[in-house]
Image (cartoon, rainbow, N blue to C red):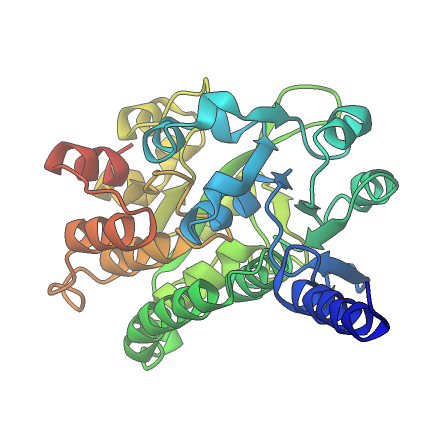
Length: 348
């Protein structure tokens, strides 16, 4: 081989390598996650492990589920996840949270990126020893911030911009109406949940002012009865609850294996049965689809519209929750809902 030809060939190989680095699977970029860590990730990671159900939902919505090699162990229990992701049974599922993560199992999958919750920093630290980890905050940061981080980390920038624009448009449409309602005209609102106790069992709780649901209530035009508690969840005192006697109550949808609480159940409850809202029927179970509409996730926009409609039925008489749910699933899950499907989401 002549020296000239060798030089030309080396130049071509060098340029090809540069092009691959810029456009191929070896290209990288730096993102700053919600633990303030600068993490170098592949520009378009093709093997993703999602260790939190909210991250998994965002990945579905951004149309990147075919890159999932494993997800959290809550997602496969969700009936709607099975419908929108026919391949769910082929994916490995890992537990998430404060427990020791399956580091060996995750490493064996050779993921390009692992996404977990910033609420569990110890989990992120352990997995970072064997894989590239991005941690997102699903408690103290907004949905848009989670979408922006995850969308950038998995290389779905175009879809991310579209999703953020959609969330902001729907949010502003509600807030522009409720924002002008004076405080003395707003209904006092309770978001009911049950918190596990260290000694076992559960205690009736509501959301404090650090909870996502607090912001949901405010944007929908209500006054959160737990607004003065600087926490995420606050165990309630029965006497205080009866003194507050909130106008409206919302409850999170039941998780796997739990039963929905009905108005009849409330009437039989020795404490809740005394609330005026029970007599008036102002108790609503939040919509429940691929994921709950009452948590800090994209489907939370359905929860916001639902709350606003229930708090102000006359003001939002023109808002069709059925149409909004169908639009959301068609646009973001690429799934056409039947009337029965829509009803089951709005009335879990």
